[in-house]
Image (cartoon, rainbow, N blue to C red; front, side):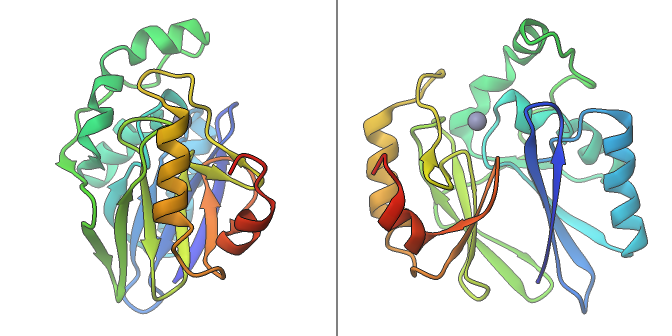
Length: 212
Ligand SMILES: [Zn+2]
């Protein structure tokens, strides 16, 4: 599995394209592209590698992770897949964007397919499993690939940090319990790709994360 990371928009958010080298089937996790040149960069990468986008997955639906979802959904004729717990966030997104002085490039689109705990998402020979870890947002999902020992954690877990819990529907204790019970039971050598900043591993965070 090839993992390509982009850093998009001023927050900045990690957008990932995962793809299978044989079938060229691919998925996008958190389309954060905001500016025209970021959209072009994403499209060019997909075109240059001759990828077929099979899924558009959201780790969660905070503003900064959702900027490019309408564009990607329309361009590749695919549904946005996310957990129902974050659906409410789509309703006040325009206002939130204005508050940050970052008008939305496109109006938010509804969730087209709900992702629930233990759902499996396949592309090529790869399978991701959904792990629901609320606390940063009610619908936060971590996408875990057991074969490749990688997890895409959104804003649940960062290198030596965790997601903030002061936003709508956030809860510190819920987040800590979820990380301990669901992420820290994954193998120590699982590489964690977060929604912001550098990658880390489960083993490193067990030892060094100051919040847990
Ligand atoms: Zn977030």
